[in-house]
Length: 208
Ligand SMILES: C[S@@+](CC[C@H](N)C(=O)[O-])C[C@H]1O[C@@H](n2cnc3c(N)ncnc32)[C@H](O)[C@@H]1O
Image (cartoon, rainbow, N blue to C red; front, top):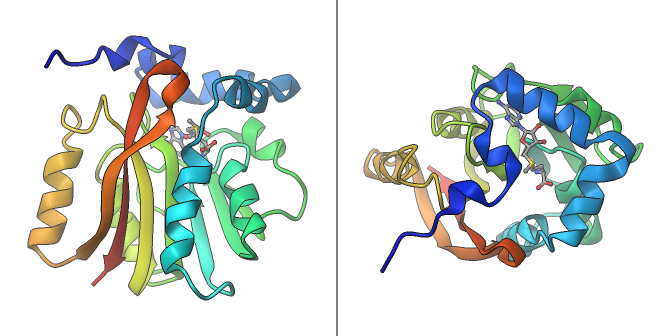
């Protein structure tokens, strides 16, 4: 079957450097444009991911790291299901500034392609939705997610189908399994941005 040309579907997929990505989101956050576009596009990543996460995350008091939280769409979903303790981190300060007050316990500006300034085994779970995509965050961030997540904790993420093999996420996930860094619980192709015919792999893993 012919490969889908996912790389041309959305303007952000053309961005190359972290600086370009940051500038783009800083602009996109203005006038609530990012959130409006996500509604128009029927972007279901946050809803689908939290639906899977909540099946296994039974303790509502757990602390969760939302990596690449953007405007807080994952936080809104987590709140709906009674989770209360989540921290958000993102490259775009302008998007962080749009997040409703008191939704997250803590917000930090961060580049997830660099070592994360958080202690080992700090969080009960890490979520990363929409952030493993063209020109954004690379597979090495998964090592950091495992480091900052407690053993037996959960890591739940999406990976845009267009970069899964091209950026080496397929190999990274297999290597982490082979070296018993984590155990696969769920891994399937999700709708993600079905309105644009862009799907994403959705994974949920338990840290060993
Ligand atoms: C498609 S948005 C997803 C945001 C949010 N998780 C959601 O589902 O609506 C991708 C997010 O990744 C962030 N991002 C891109 N590159 C990043 C990096 N190197 N470090 C941290 N965040 C990054 C962007 O600023 C943006 O908020």
